[in-house]
Image (tube, rainbow, N blue to C red):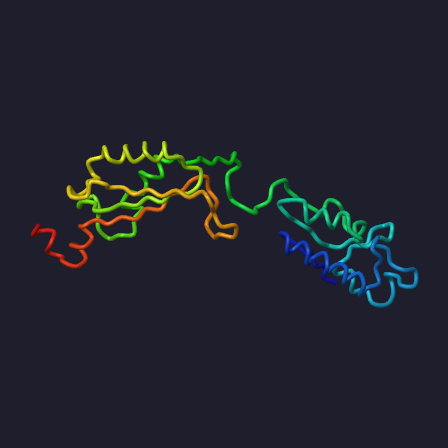
Length: 221
């Protein structure tokens, strides 16, 4: 008679395998401790169960199965379940770490951006929804809407730092330049992540009109 060895790997494999062996025991009349009732002996009748079970000298039937998992949580359920005496301990193989993620074991690190940093990032071309480079034109208006733990002192310092950069220029006939708004309140069920501070950037640059409406306007003017 052929002997079949079942190998159950991973959480799904272990849980399915545990349910299968419970069914095998019910079908062949094997008790949860591996013993067979006295009315049914291995020498007579149907002995097909020997394909999946190995009988020891003490008359105990042990499944020809191996359970393998990288972490012991699921296999511990087999070790402490109703059929815990059915399996051989050496056939329940576990590791210490699972494969739920592939991140390196390291401490989590999160850095809070300052008001000056989030303000400077607004003027980076990579963070803007435009196809042209706003640094090639002049700003006519700029609105910065801050939200969160933002104080006027930090906003004024961030704007003063922006004005010192040559890449950001405003038209001569608009001396105001920046408009700033602050609001600390946030919706309770908002879809936006709740961060310490954030800013929304709205601006008008005349190079956007020339590039979009008049492709030759940039060369002309």
